Length: 465
Image (cartoon, rainbow, N blue to C red; front, top):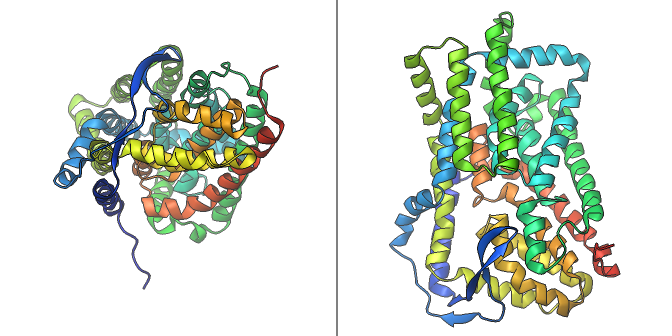
C-alpha cells in the first residue's frame, strides 16, 4: 500500500515550525529603508550598504499565533475566496454553466481541442501585459468543469487560466508588478527591452501550451493516466448525469451567462483602468452571484443558502491561505527576513558574466518562497542587486530579466503563495498531487530561464535603441 502524502495543512504548519526554528539559529538584521515613489506608488525601498546585525527575536509561542496573524495579513484574499465560492455556487445552481458548457461543446464539435491553445494564450497575454495573478483565481470554477466535460481532468482546467497567467506573469513583457517596477528602481527606461521580452514570452507560452496539450491528449485517450483520476471520477459522473438530463438552453441560462461575461469584462477593465484589487473583485463577483440568481428566478432564501454553501465549501482554502501568511509573519517578527536577503545577495556578488545573471535568477527563485509578492520582492532586492550587477559586468536590463523570471514560474508550486493554494482549493486539487504533476514543468522552465539569460549577459543587452 503506497504511503499517503502529508496533508497540505501538515506541510504548511511544518514550514511555520521551520521558520520559527530559523529565528533561533540565524542572527537578526535589518536594512534601512526610505520612502520613494516607484511607478507612481509610494513604497519603502531598501538602502544598499545599510545592513546591520541586530538581536534576533526567537519565535516560540508565536507559532500558534501565526495562523491567526496570517489570516489578518491575508484577509483580503481570504475574503475574496469565500465570496467568490459563494457567488459561483449560486451561478452553478442556476444550471447556466452546465448548459453553457454543453452548448459550447456541441458548437466546437471536433475542434474542441482548440480551447486549450486559445484560452491559454489569452490568459498568458493578460499575465504578461498587466500582471494577472489574483484575478485568475475565480476562473478555476469555470474551466475545471469545462475541462472535465471535454474529457480531460481538473489539472487541465487549472492550467487553462492559472498556469497560463502564471507563465505570462513570469515571462511578461510589460508586467507592471515585475518588469516596470524593477526597471524603475534599477534606473532602466520603462518599457525598454520589450522585443526580447516578447520573444521570451512567446517561447514560454508555447512551451506551456504544448506541455498541457500533450498531457490532455494522454488523459483523453486513457483517463486512468490522470493524476486526479480517482478524485475526478465522481465529478465526471455528475457531468455525465447532467448531460443525460440536459434540458434545452433557456433564455434564463443565456441571461446568467451574460451576467458572468459582464463580471469578466468588469474584472479586466476594473483592474487595468481603475486599479481595482481584492475588495473590488469580491464586490464584483458578489454582485454577479446575486444578479445571476435573480435572473434565474431563484428566491432570496434559496439564494442565501446557496451562497453560504459555496462559501462553506471553501473554508479549507481560506485557512490554508492563512497558514501560508503565517510563515512570512514568523520570519518578519523574528527579524531574519533581511538577514536571509543580505546573505543571498552577498553570495551572488562573487559571480560575473553569465554566471552572475543566472545566480541572481536563482536568488530570486529562493526568495520567492519567503516573499511571494512580485512588487514587494522588487522593492527589497533591486536596490541591492543593481549595484552588484554593475560590479559583475552585466547590464541592469539583464538583471531585470533575471528578476522577473525568478519572481514567477516557481510561484505555481510554492505553498507560501496565496494565489496558488487558493486556486488549488477552488479546483479541489490536493497540493501534493499538484506538486507531483507540476514539478517536471518547473524543471523545464528552470532550464529555459537559465538559457534565455545567456545571450543578454554575453552581449551586454541594454534594450535601448
